[in-house]
Amino acid sequence: MFGKTNLIVLNLKEVFLDAFVKCYFQIPLDVLKKPSREAMVQWLDNVFEEIYADYKSSKSSLWLSAKANDKVVGFLVIDIAKYPEEIYLAQLAIDPPYQGGGIASSMIHSLFDQFPECGRFVVITRSANEEAKGLYNALGFAPSSYMHEGYGREFFTGFEYSKRQ
Image 1: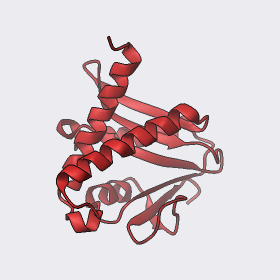
Image 2 (image 1 turned 180 degrees about the vertical axis):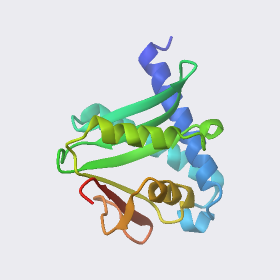
Image 3 (image 1 turned 90 degrees about the horizontal axis):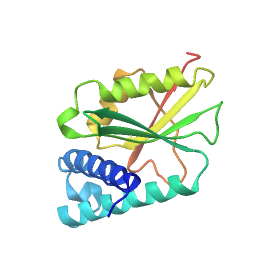
């Protein structure tokens, strides 16, 4: 029998997979460096497992969620290791039926409100992820030279939002 925590994790994983499969399905496999859509889904499954394992072992990672009808429909993972100077938005996923309804924007604006003393919020996204780039631009993030450790400019684009602009 699954405990409540396990059910929540399964719900988070479902949101993550559904959101990223929808988004990445529009990106050519050669750009994703995946041989097939099945390999892409397996890769995304592994990515979620890594993110969750990092969360369980890290004291600097926080997960914020959005719910509708007692079901998680979106989540935002942040890394506060460099807080208060900087907060890294490590992961954002919104369940596809709820995309476009302002949940991602509300979560990020809420983050700004919850951490008023933080002057800089940074994020990276795949260069081919036009939806994410559009969201961050619409929220006032500017393209920047920021790049998170372990990622490269060949495939990713950095953005930053500075309250001191």
